[in-house]
Length: 109
Length: 114
Image 1 (tube, rainbow over the protein chains, first blue to last red):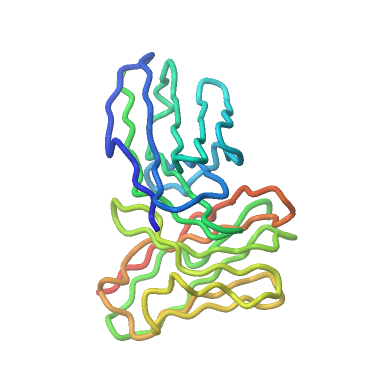
Image 2: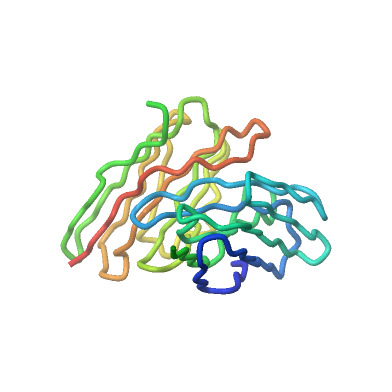
């Protein structure tokens, strides 16, 4: 039931773009995205509720394909502050969440 | 407080001892989750409380793990007869349960079983 994230790790130079994918074998109610910096608790980024819905937050946006049970997180013009581990959390049924194994993102100057 | 708090922040114990981990959710939040995060790993769902309903215990790894939530607020996760593989960061998160489906995480309890 744990979603699969890809890639496992990515290194970017400042200003480059990245895409992180999250795929589930189960039908999903929603997908959540979180970022966790080393030694800190995960911080909520955004939630996607409907098939095909896309949301944005500054230069970070995401899409959710309900039919394919897939979500992608898009980071554009990356900044040093984007470094961290990104987790997708999938909601299989009301309030039952499973998190992916995470994608480590490192932005270098 | 404004956020989710957990105590202790760090716990070192000997194999075979029992430990209790505490979570104080954001006031008014009806949903509360416990997760476990091993070094370099993702978040493993343990248990979920919603209001006064029976908890969803489907994620508890063994019968040594139990949790309760008193008065719909504070929650305690208890691990009996700890094993070395129990070493991890235990994270608690609360959610309003009013349609806003954002989970607010506490800072976690780092458990080390020697």
